[in-house]
Length: 300
Image (cartoon, rainbow, N blue to C red):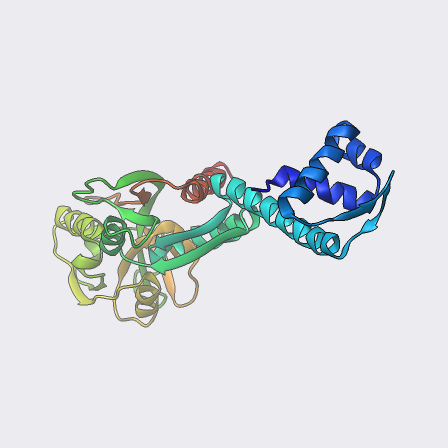
């Protein structure tokens, strides 16, 4: 069986048409190189080089073998490079799921920076609620997720804290309380509420209801959108009031205002986490980059 070393030896001789020059290129002595080429020809059963005291030219078989030898060496180099890239998390595919509240903040920068650093990784993206992400991780339909805590019964899913924020009240710009910078959560007791359904995020939904209960009321929910962007649109359209992560509300403009909440039931924490069963090299690279971005933003 011909090995890569023999291919390289032949290519060196064929390109230089000189055993001494080829031996110097290969950092070996000339006699072993001449012997290696004769053995290669014997193994193939063809003459590759026309020579007496020196190589004069390649035979027809030698020309063809040179072309294929170069291709073989190039493919071998690509295979080695691909293996090294994969081991470093720089190639292959990565399935990332995320909650929609990251779309206006963390996610765009994470995707942009990740593609710059790891252009060989093919990202497959899926917006999903925390319960959907947990199920996808258990069924190996996603590799890594960004979701909202708390999560009950995580089982074998690893949850690493990523970002800590707090909820703020968001009101239509024309609302009677819109000029307030801060208000008690209890002041929203009689307002219509826009709040996602329990099954879209059981942990965060329970946290909001507990805060309202501590403030002395049960919110009157009139709409239950799935996405944060829809919630913002409904509030701007004067359908009701809502709670949003402060960082998300800061980036949303047009038709709504935000107010810090105080008093019983406050503060209401909002926490993002990285979720995974096990980290592949590419998933680890993305996790590390997400943590780096969050730390950088907190230092600014």
